[in-house]
Image 1 (spheres, rainbow, N blue to C red):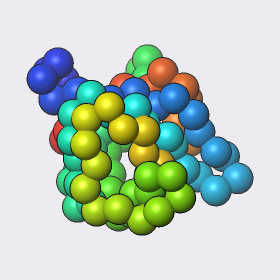
Image 2: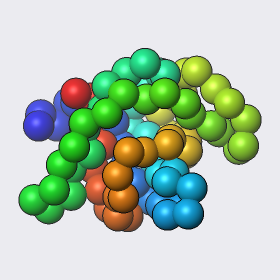
Image 3: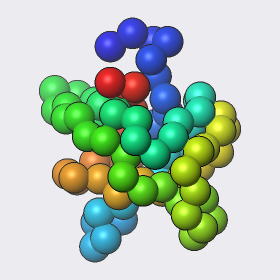
Length: 83
C-alpha cells in the first residue's frame, strides 16, 4: 500500500463489540472502503458507521480518533489504508 493512502492507525480494539478506535492521519467518510494491515494479515471492508465521542458521524477529519465497527479482530498498531 502506498504511504499517501494511509488513513491512520488502530489505537484500541473493543473485542466484545467489534469496534476499532483509529487515530486518523487524514479524513475519511462513511461509505469509504478501507484496508486493515498488520504484519502478514490484511482485509478490506466498507465503513458502515463511525462515531466520535459516542456520537454518530458521517465524516471524520485528520487527527480525530474515531470508532469504526470492524468485520474482524484487529490489534493496536494495525495500519488503516484507503482501499
